[in-house]
Length: 502
Ligand SMILES: Cc1cc2nc3c(=O)[nH]c(=O)nc-3n(C[C@H](O)[C@H](O)[C@H](O)COP(=O)(O)OP(=O)(O)OC[C@H]3O[C@@H](n4cnc5c(N)ncnc54)[C@H](O)[C@@H]3O)c2cc1C
Ligand code: SF4
Image (cartoon, rainbow, N blue to C red):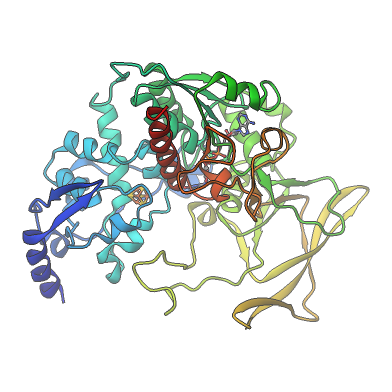
C-alpha cells in the first residue's frame, strides 16, 4: 500500500499547481518524499503527571529541532492536501513542512504567518482538524502538524525573525475593534498592517479574551498571549482595556468617532441548569471558576479573594466538553479532595464510526491531559436536582438516560430506577455558551440577531448597522480560537475593502 501511495504521490508533485487567493503556485519537490515510510510519528509528550499538577506551567513539552525536522519529513505533499482543506485559516501546511524539513525555518515562518496571525496560540491549543484530515491518518499516524506549527513560530521568536513592523504609511482611516479575543486581535492586526489606525476596546483589565481569562495557563501560558499583544502595540495598535462599550462609551459614540467598527465580543452568555436547588451555595459557572484562577495566576486577584477555590472540596463538573476538562485540571491543581465529570451524552466511540469517515474530524473519545491527572468520568447522566443543607450544596441527584434514534433525530429517554446521588460541595456548570451577551452594546445599537441570538451578518460580515461589522464567537456562537482568527481575518479584509471604497 505504501508503494502505491508513494508512486501516486510522485505523479502528483510533478504535475500539481495550486490556485490560492487568485495566485497560481507551482508545487516544489518535497525534500524527502519517502520520509513517512522511514520515520514514525513522534510527539513531544507531556510533563509527568506528578510534576505538572503541582504548578500551572504548560503541560506540553518541546521536541528538539532535529527530531522536529524529521517529523516534518513525514509530510507526503499529497496531490490534494486535505490538511490544508480542513484548516480554518488555510495554513499552507505541506509548504511549511517541506521548508522545515530542509532546515529553512525563516522561510517556513514566513509561509506560516501569511495565513495565521497567531500560530503560537493555535500551535498550542488547536484541536488540529488538519491532523484528523492528514492522509497518513487513514493509518492513524498523522504528521505532527500542530506541534510543527508551534515549533516554527517559537523558533521565529527565539531567532529574532519577528520584529515589530509598523505600516510605512497610514491611510488616515480609523477603525474601532470591540473585544480583544482572537477574532478582534486578528482583525486589528490585519487592519493595522493595512495602514488603518486601529483602536481595540476591551472591557476586562487585560486583553486576550478567552485566551487570557478562560483557557488555563497549563494549556496556554499568558506570557505567550502578552508577547503577541506587546508586539501589536509596538506596531501601532491602540489598546484601551477596562472600557466596556455600551456602558463606559456608547456604541453610537464609537460609530460617530470611527470610519468602521468591528464587533468581536465573544459568546459570553453561559448555559444554565434550571433544576431544583440551583440557588444553593457552591454552584458556579465554569467560566467564573476558571477566570478567578487565571486572575490569581496573573496577579490581578489576591488568592484570599478567590472564594472559588477547589482545595479539599469534592468537585463535580457538569458538562463533558473542553471547558469542563479545563475545570478538572484546575481543580486538581488546587488540590481538590476528588473530581468527577459527568456528561448527558453517550460515551463517544474509541474509533471512528462508519458515518464519520476520514477526512472529517473524528468524533471519538477524547482523553485530555487533565483527565489523565485523576478524574472520574461518567456519561449518559442527567442532573435531576441539586441537594443541600442549610443553603449549601451537598450533591446532585442524577438519573441514567439512553438516546434513541427516532424520526431522524436522537431523543433522550430516562431509564427508570437508575437515580443516584453524587456527593459534591463544589459544582461547576460547564454546559457551554448560548450566545453573546445582548444587554448593553447589542441592544443599544439594535443589532439584528439570528435565530440562535448571535449577531446576524451577511456574507461580508456586515451587520444591519451601517459601517458596523462583526466577527468571531459573537457571530458563530461558541467555537474555537482558529475559527475566531479566520473570522477576524475575513472581517478585516471586508472592512479594508469598505474603507477603500469610501
Ligand atoms: C474554558 C475555555 C477553554 C477553551 N479552550 C479552547 C481550546 O483549547 N482551543 C480552542 O481552539 N478554543 C478554546 N476555547 C474557545 C475559544 O477560546 C473561543 O472560541 C475564542 O476565544 C473566541 O474568540 P472571540 O474573539 O470571538 O471571543 P472572546 O475570546 O470571547 O473575546 C471577546 C472579548 O470581548 C470582550 N468584550 C465583550 N463585550 C465587550 C464590550 N461591550 N466592550 C468591550 N469588550 C467587550 C470580552 O471581555 C472578551 O475579551 C475555549 C473556551 C473556553 C471558555
Ligand atoms: S491552525 Fe489548527 S487546523 Fe490549522 S494547521 Fe494549525 S493545528 Fe492544524
